[in-house]
Length: 218
Image (tube, rainbow, N blue to C red; front, side, top):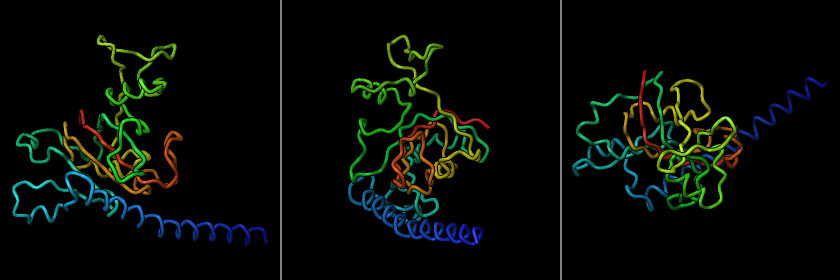
């Protein structure tokens, strides 16, 4: 009897989770598409439509899993193809900022949930942020600064295909190249699923992720 009750509870939980996804994911996708179509520059244009456009080098978004949207600012740079490319197994060093995508406007620095961008860190510190977990520290936990007095941000290196929580990020970085400036917008299931990153993310919230790819190694 206990086993039967337990299995029934599991089935009910799975059904509720499935129904939640059926309701939440389309809403989040609609919200992202609405923002990229109406408020953001450049506006949403698919990679396929860009290839058929009469405009020269129109900016476009690539999609992953239908709910991750990627824009590369420098995709048409002439020397871009000479840079190292991100592929499965690559180690990618990033400067990035992570946001809950909760508004229909571009996220502001003071809305940042986590970053290793020195400019954003300094702005947040001016607003009262304790930078201990955002920047490099000495043996005593004191945040380090460079010779110019700027905080030394934590290095963030991602192993593509390494099973990290941000599965959507890993998939979307494949095909990018060193020095690319990238914007990513994704529904929660593509970002972190049911797991909350560092206790910072709002549960089942879409994500905006802005990054520069500093280095790509195999």
